[in-house]
Image 1: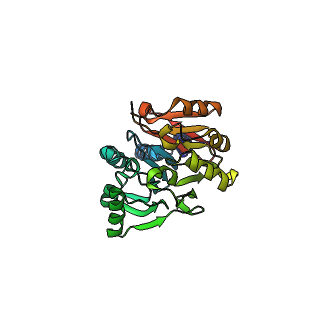
Image 2: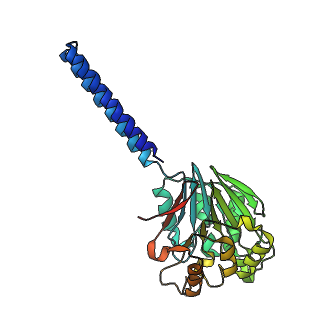
Image 3: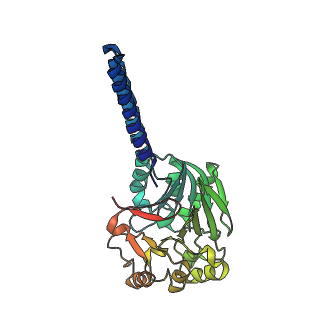
Length: 315
């Protein structure tokens, strides 16, 4: 399928060819003078400049749907953009504040339509307060499992003070992200402070015929709950954001068999203390023939979808 830039290039070539053919025809008939010649040349150059400008504009347009797993060290922050709508899933740790700010500045983002916090751990909500105070946030999507953690409490108080719409995630909820759909698959309400990972919001994004799956830091316990409560057809995906930074307690063989991802994105810090991603988890990815990319090795990971397939875009 040809791009708009290619169509415009063809149109520009045809237009220029027509101008010259018309000029040559009139020249042979002796009906064109020097003045008309200069007018024709000026018209041709003007049309050529307009066409080149259109080509430049269309080629510079961002992909209609993109997912970027930002390089925020040993933490999580994913930026999803579709049309003019922005969804951010988790915010990274506070020590990665500048990385998040630079990423938003480079992309000229000053509004986050949806800010989804998968669970109340600092490496996922560390920059939430800063984002609420510094950017326009349309809606804050929160896990059903609460926490009395001081940082998370401050985030909730900030959202309330700024009158940001707060929604507690429940399975079956959907949100329009441009032409894409964010669907909440699971948001357990009974996780405790000892293991908030298993209270992570699990969601998927549908864009055309492509599916992106996000499981936060869900471990095997929540994965089993997901497999037993969500229809199998909703778990199959093209792209999977690796659970719990590539821990061997996440992305079980059973979940991978149900989801069959072709691409897996792993967010982890370089030379992190946890040894993420674990070799046992990588071997499970190999077993289902999934390819993967890692922020610790490749920096920010960018993926695009045309509604039919998903591609990793290398720098």
